[in-house]
Length: 209
Image (cartoon, rainbow, N blue to C red):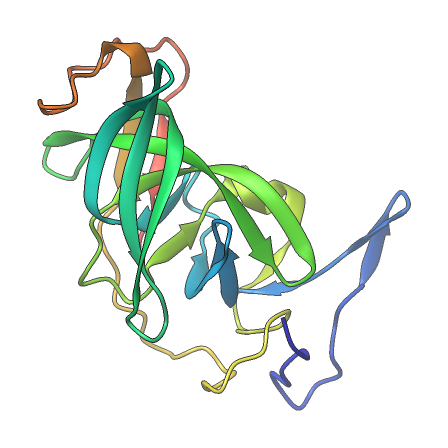
């Protein structure tokens, strides 16, 4: 995905320590990533305060293929071009928003490429048109990607943008994933059903931007 961008006057850090036989690659808190196959290139915020990754999706619709529930949606790349993608529905997440309001979101598994790493991880499909970054990479992916340097950007991905993080980062309020729904219980023509309460610990979904 291109050469590593210079991010500061300090020496570049790619493999500061080793865990066993695997080098620990330091990532910036903002990186270029590719999602889905074929890949859609977008900027992503690597957010250690979010448990589940999230992506801005438009025109989200549910359909059935060979008896399996799928989701069709559009992504918008860095050039504001729309790309239609489809993925099997994994589950429905019930998201509790600030103020006590909640909403249901579809969850799909998508291919994620960050630097030289490729993962398959769950993403909630969320309408985020006013957010700075269309993708949040949460701890469900960061635990395998490696640590994040909160003072640097575009460490493992090239960018024409400024490499130093801005001092002011306008944010969105926290949202909490408090329970889940079963994919088989959804009606294509209806709003997502009230998910069955899950006994697992609540998940932080989107910690902010």
